[in-house]
Amino acid sequence: MCGIVGYLGPRSATGVLLDELSRLEYRGYDSAGLAVLDRGRLRVVKTVGKVRALAALVERDPLDVHLGIGHTRWATHGRPSTPNAHPHVSTAGDLAVVHNGIIENHAELRARLTAGGAVFVSETDTEVIAHLLAAKLAGPAAGDVGRALLLAAAELRGAFAVAVVAEAAPDCLYVVRQQSPLVIGLGEGETFIASDIPAVLPYTRSVIVLEDGDVACVRAGSVMLSNLAGESVERPARHIDWDIHAAEKGGYEHFMLKEIEEIPAAVAQTLRGRIDPAGQVVAAELGLSDERLRAVRRLSIVACGTSYYAAMVGKAVIEKLARLPVEVDLASEFRYRSPILSDDQMVIAVSQSGETADTLAALREAKRRGVLTLGVVNVIGSSLSREADANWPTWAGPEICVASTKAYVTQLVALYLLALHLARLNGALDDAGVAEVTTALSTVPALLEQILAEREQIADMGRRYAHWEHFFYLGRGLDAASSLECALKLKEISYKRAEAYAAGELKHGPLALMTPEVLVFGLATQRELVDKTLSNLQEVAARGARVIGVVRAGDNVVTGQVDEVIRVPDADDLLMPFLTVVPAYLFTYYLSAALGREIDQPRNLAKSVTVE
Ligand code: AGP
Image 1 (cartoon, rainbow, N blue to C red):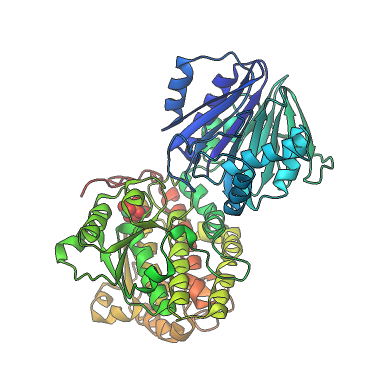
Image 2: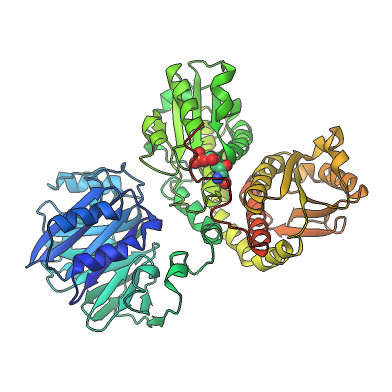
């Protein structure tokens, strides 16, 4: 997720662009840049680092310009570097583009454009857009930037919000929106472009929210809209009455709720480009040959906190699908237990931040022992992603709330896809078996949207139980693994006592804790285990605990046997870890909000734990 901006009007374009970018840094902040027309000539300034690093460069060489575009990056393809920073320019250097999204067919376009004489200077998918536009301008579009954009957009696959500035169009900018957000702010004799509303609010509250397929020619104070076929379309301007601080949270009171609501999009983004039309996993970006991966006969996963709990789910799924043994270690313990490692092993390090000291240390221990390492990391360019032998990133976008939510769910996506790829390589699954699971995975974003649509029921539940002090999450199989993350979230945001246990384990001790003051969530979604889970829930109910079942829609085993139920959509057992965790996140959020907890910055915690 990146932030793109644009401006045309009487103000200093560099000043406006920098201000707009600073309001979008929550969308990405590893590098930044801007492109302006200075007396008809394209000028580009870009750098690694945050927007303030870009501002320092601009201040050194002030420009009196009134038209331009800008970008703050969240790296997906290509590590953070000045060449990889946006804007990207044509070989002739007479047009520049900024982009938010992922171009799935960038490799084939790059090959074709290179053969046509384009000279690529970055590792990014975005750069293909600049060269594709130049090819259209030199060919069928005959110098018409708007037409070139329509022709280029027709060849792009994936998600893209693009803004274009070109010497061939000295008094307008062009934008196109396809699956990545883009808004246009209308001022008096000036126009603003941005990925999100916060960037334009200081200047105007009259905003056009573009829809998929919208293309716009933007001039100072006016906009002409069309669809991808070039036919005119109308989009009403809306009056936005958010206050500016709330707007950075997308109108939400906390980043946590905003990021929970982003989970479906984050899952879709992490799946994007990794399943081919035949339902097979596309894993070229791993940079590991099939032969090298076939030699892997054992796996270890090292992680901390929420990432460790994603690893627990990953273990169950990799063993189930790929039939490879998986050990999961707390990264802080891994190197102190003198792990038995072998050259047929791969150590996977899972980390949202990619900077967690314990996980980095575990990765370095594995590398010191000569074992292949793989990073499953959300922050491209982080230490862990640079030190791992290979990477299989999550694309959740920046996660601002200290508590991880959307990143956790995208870690599951990455581990499920890895399991399928390994299963296909070692023959544990055939093409049909892989396609069956990838087809199911592709339904997860829509299933999650169904859960989020019912969030008021869970909000009410969170408020009702806000003053309880003791909580358990129980489950069996995949539900047991999911319970771990559910309990951690409640602990770290609400500061309540919350434990997670395999339901069958209660009678071996924790049952002694069951009293009428305890609220137990029983995750009971695994078809062949639901009866046994119900028995365990009845054991705790017999001791007076209050029980909320988390069941699939249509359940008739647990429903009616416990105090309350939360229903998640009926889906394959394998998908349940994606679904059951979202009601737990919502429950934690609303209970904590009812208590007035800090939520985005819980006491004692940090977003990236860079100390051991
Ligand atoms: C998650 O909500 C917590 N903030 C914490 O457990 C976190 O998952 C852990 O510190 C690991 O962080 P990482 O994923 O960035 O390595």
